[in-house]
Image (cartoon, rainbow, N blue to C red; front, side, top):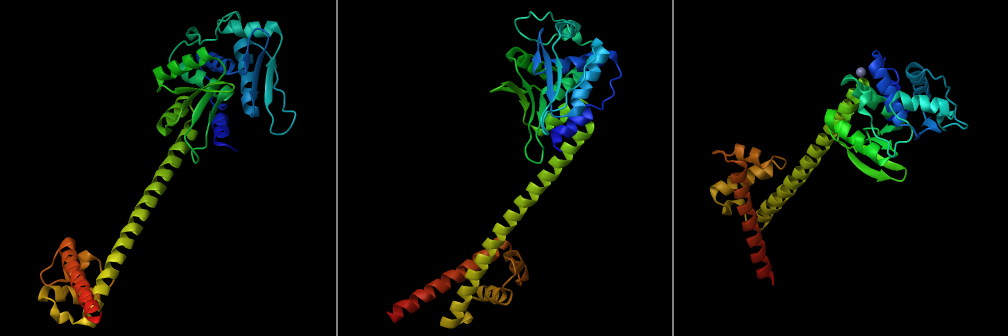
Length: 307
Ligand SMILES: [Zn+2]
């Protein structure tokens, strides 16, 4: 099952203990409904738990009994549909609406205290929210049909958490977050604590994996470079030995040439450390570069003699 499903399943199990929060969660659900008007209130969800939670809230808060309709085909939506104007008006009225408002906006009079905001967002997320599997991407959203409602949700989240962004989509507006910390915060705020922890763990693992990959790439690149340099030194030493002799080198160059030849796998700092008067990595590199120059000159001389 998807990460979003796990979150919703967890949210649908939150025990709603205070009547103020019960009302706020129900309010979040109705505002997140596909349709919320005098003539029709419709919730659609892929998840049976979500549809059942909504029915339970409607019973508790508005005294209305309704049953979810199972999807007609597998993978379809569970639907909670209210068509009787009496029921629709009762629900609108419970949240302070007449049904004649020109714009659907959040009615903050429904929130008794700060505790109610988390409950409201929880209901809204169950009805119209989604969150991507953090193994793939960090994305959290509310898909909201109406412009003013999307603005109000953004402002409300901005006051209590961090302000999300808004974008448009064919079906309306999307209020979203793309940062893992902000998604963790809102999951915790809605009381999806286990899901928030799961996200955190996945993020830590992902970061660790990236770090290891970066370190490995870097090490491989460095190893490649020093192997390449080592090969150049060995070639140069072989050239000097075949065209002349290592005795032609000054004592300090000969010392490092012999060490290099006898320790082909040693790093520059290791070679530097083997010298009688030890040298740093760059000191060793400097001497070996001189040897490469001498070998190149010898080769050139030989070529000129032969031509
Ligand atoms: Zn409350």
